[in-house]
Image 1: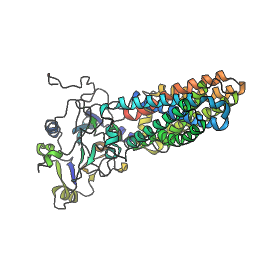
Image 2 (image 1 turned 180 degrees about the horizontal axis):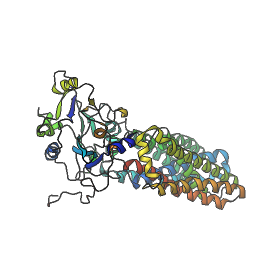
Image 3 (image 1 turned 30 degrees about the horizontal axis):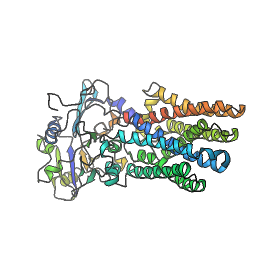
Image 4 (image 1 turned 90 degrees about the horizontal axis):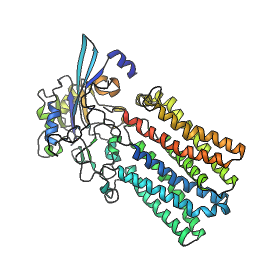
Length: 213
Length: 299
């Protein structure tokens, strides 16, 4: 079994439902994200378009984070998911340096590395990841890439030529695919980041607010 | 290519999370800097004992002591950089040997063990023959201990600018630069000839490292757009441009010129000045090179 993800960017409308569902399901602390939806505006008024790209761990076949982890806190499980054992993690941040997708962060509460696990705990109970359930337009497609009859395999077959991964030149062989993605969606260098225009870029309090510590 | 695309599309990120910031900062710089001294001093002691055995004999204990201190500074900063520093023992009890961190930790531990044996041989046993035998093995182990950080940077797949074998060469140059600088400053009773040799090692290490940095600066952007984007931080009005050039001048250019002047004037004072300059500049140049790839958003 090799679990994988596919996001149809033609369908995604940037509602961030997946992002919130992930936050709630995995109790992701403030200022950190396992999954986020990036907005990029393209063109000049009146010819403008907004693009939405959900970004999460790619669960690579040749995962640099798994290789660099000194204590095997990041490890593969049988279904191909790159999982993390937060009790074993020493917080060296090697994985943060190694992940070409910026998908790993240091959890400010546990002081260990954390990332999307494709909701491995839900998958183990035969449930879909929280983000898949929350998506109102079924843009997130999750399933077994080794099973030719799975939805994700069929989707890939039907959209041949329009299926892409992020940074294929890195040789990580991601198990996370995008349909309908362009350079602007998938290449972080293909868009400008103007200081002050992004949410949370001036965040100073990294602890949860509201007295819940 | 992407730069032209941005100009055409006017693509601007309008909603996203902030940049994660510097994860490996000055603590890791201290780690690399202290390790360079710790292994470099051992390389220089070995050279001096081969070339100037009589006058270098008095430095067996002193040089090893400096190495022990520097390596413990390196280990201290390595551990305090861990977000869960009290779990550092996991590296020994749950080791994952594909990681350069694991391999490096094990080798550094063995290196410390050999240094302690050298201290015992020079201070308690006072057995120079035994010392020299152990020193040969310590020098052999000092090579991979010096290089493992380069392997770690190479394994940091996200940071395109940290390439092998360039980083490996930089680590060796850093060790010979800092090792020779420390020995020059420490070697009060060394002859001018011995100090001159150390100065030449320092000058060529500085020259080699400078050539590598300049090559990366000029040719790196031609190979990868990520490298080009990172190097913008040290070019023109880049955020780290001043610090980068300060590091290059203080670590490499000034020491090289000072060593030439010192040899022309047979001046050990100028050699001392070159050494101090090299040690300060090395920290700065290492720091800039460590930090700038982390300023680039990966997604």
